[in-house]
Image (cartoon, rainbow, N blue to C red):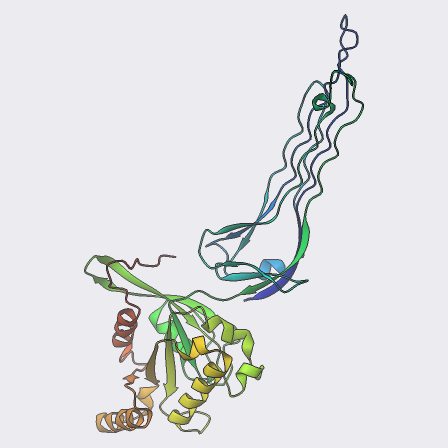
Length: 347
């Protein structure tokens, strides 16, 4: 199950109390204070981990509390520091303070770490408070309190390419053909109810032994999606993390509309959601070309759509495999993957 939002409560550990004790040994009267310090409480640390894909683990567990430090002991023994609590989140998770709405951290890169709640400091034992005028201090510091806060987690998928288009445009079928992903596929709208990720791999070229691209299949969009209609803004935000959009247009739309009308409707939704989405680089792919019979008919359909859009399109068929390699090569070039300073993403 793909879960992309959650609310959790985190609390760091309280510091252990310092010890107020006195040395008691045979033949050593009035040995003086020997109370040790308490251990520090555990902190809560957020970690962007490759091994986590969704926020599913947080739907059944809302409280994440670190342990407190151990109290100090006599004979100058210090209490043990508590271990930090690491919360592993998918890369791309935005962490907000649920009370104020403030963005605390954007875990946009793998391996990022952020201390979201600092553990309490251990209290000092009475060994620290002995003075010439107070040689038998009978007090010690209590442990410092931990921090607690309620967090709102929102996941935005990180991918090279986002597949967008109307419901039933063929996005899931395309993803299943160019990667090892196995999204649900059927001949009715809204088959995809959650984003799917896949890795497309091309043969090596130049200094690359293999060429990989992470592709996200974004659930189909409809008009007024930016206001919450259909699957709405829940999935539009995932498109923000992608570097390139592949816009799939059905050559013979199942909704009875014109392909060009469908294209403009989706573009309008992206622009209404944010300028950032509207300005993302895009490749237009005319899908389900196997439904058009004859080479001349296909060429005429492509020419007509290119003329109306004023943009080039790539013709593909996920069923027959025609045009898929050309599409991936075009994506690789648009991503600038062959530039000398660009590293291959490995997952």
